[in-house]
Image 1 (cartoon, rainbow, N blue to C red):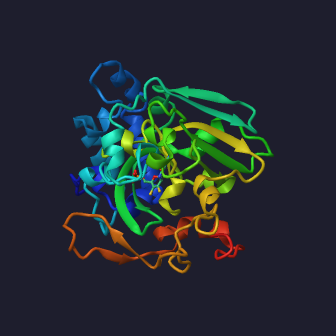
Image 2 (image 1 turned 90 degrees about the vertical axis):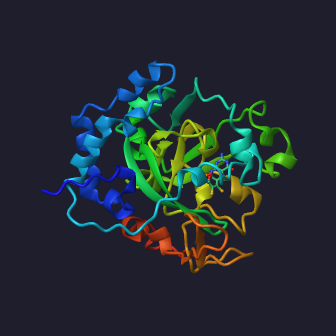
Image 3 (image 1 turned 120 degrees about the horizontal axis):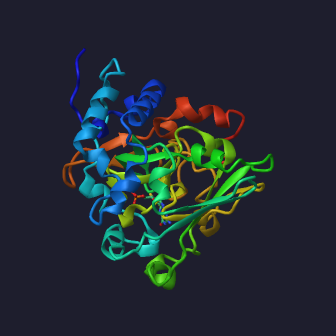
Length: 334
Ligand code: MTE
């Protein structure tokens, strides 16, 4: 059998989100004993908890995982790491795209506490090390489509939000999931000053319906490009919901609460006619101030690179998610 030697983050997203590959990769990770390795590595002062994703053994895992796939269908070019980590929206650190990388460098992520609470039988809290060792980590390559009409292709490392929720044993009143970013104005200059923070009401909050939260595509990310998340991308843990506009993918999360009513969300609170609760990527429903029919894909190439592409319904993930909205008017529930 042909063994490909590409790194796993070079897989196309179709390959990575394919159900068979997805399960196969998790299995291989388990077989090779990588699960839990994060905590061991984290004990050494300089090691990143995700070092194993770029280690020699990880290459073996990648090759084994690749044996499970038949066809080569690479259609996406990854956005270079340097762009993923320097062109950011993280208003807690400033509103310009270059502000977060500049202002978040001394942001402390360890120790950290993420609480899972609300309508659950078994509430629990994860500390920093637990974020890397409590669930099966895997690599997923997803498109990230910002509501501002630019997009990237990012190799995330993380685990399914569904796994985290199931562990808390939600009860029958758990209809929605409410997320909250850390509130720490001493560390986050945007929370201290309306001018720096763009007039947003902090802490930043987001929400999903329970079926959206349990969808296998919904990822809790702790890394990208095989390393722990940089502060500007939402360290130590963030949400990634690839079929929704990027503002749903809330960063630096400290609280996940299962609730009965639809929770408030930051951008909806700020301008509800512009940003809805659902925020599914939809080329047919324009933002009141600009078209959503196309997007600028951030890849290599300079200012004049031809990188304008058509926007796809649900950001191209319709097969996996469209059925959740089959009886809804997506113009009304934008
Ligand atoms: N989370 C918090 N807490 N604060 C923010 O300002 N910006 C959102 C989202 N998550 C934001 C956030 C927006 S608008 C986008 S497009 C993505 O993060 C950007 O993620 P990235 O910087 O990793 O590309």
